[in-house]
Image (cartoon, rainbow, N blue to C red; front, side, top):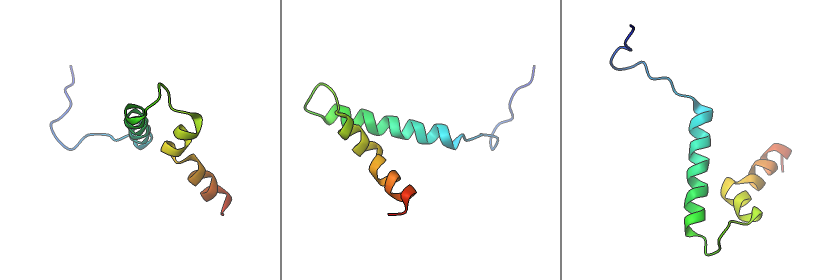
Length: 59
């Protein structure tokens, strides 16, 4: 049986970490929302979809 050595061998999945952060942002927004569900516009705002589209298009 192999046991992972102690210290310094942690692997970070940056994509997974980014997805976890986005999920956390959605959970925070949903808990602060006054309605039962977040609107699609609210979700886009939390996830900064419009900013990503603007950056991608160069405007």
